[in-house]
Amino acid sequence: MVQDEVEQMTIKSKSQFKRVLLKLSGEALQGDKGFGIDPVVITNIADEIKDVHAMGVEIALVIGGGNIFRGLAASTQGMDRASADYMGMLATTLNALALQDALERIGVVTRVQSAIAMQELCEPYIRRKAIRHLEKGRVVIFAAGTGNPYFTTDTAASLRAMEIHAEAILKATKVDGVYNKDPNKHKDAKLYDKVTYLDVLKEGLEVMDSTAISLCMDNNMEIYVFNMTKKGNIKRILMGQKLGTIVSKKI
Image (cartoon, rainbow, N blue to C red):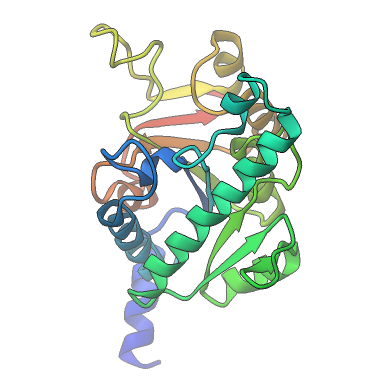
């Protein structure tokens, strides 16, 4: 065995997971701008993903579209909910294409698969093809949610994680994990190291929506909630460091 192959096997053995799904909010891409895509932020995210990819981890992503358009918010202002949600799906596709460009500019081969047919822009979502891309070392970005209105990108992330047989969902946030109340408003907010799916549902903790949490609970899919704004946190989780909050069946 050549030296490069030995080194690669050593790097791969350090990760506690072989395949993960990273869930990013659309707001994560806007930085301090309050809207749209911040080129510096998306470049930093791409660098983080490249580092994880270099570990030999198979990584898929789901990105929200809240930095461009929020379907639920628009529906509360009188827009038809289904129409608003479809517009939100298009926003997630814009973000997916932007991240694909950022990744490929630094040498990471990436595929975007959309739940809505857009053959000139990206591939249609095909589960077996997505898995094959991952096996070949490509990063796969799932766009347009589930392709159905009334379902969030949180639910899409949970669904895609099950379908591709991911070992965990990494949920990126702007805070250090799951708190019992908003840490930006309450100085005495308590950070959980671990919390159960049932506690998340009972206490209404802001992790993912109830449909996504229920899906993870039914299929025993652990969710790692962490602070994406701190460089290197994705890698730290994969290396097994105690970080953020783990949502699982038992504490």
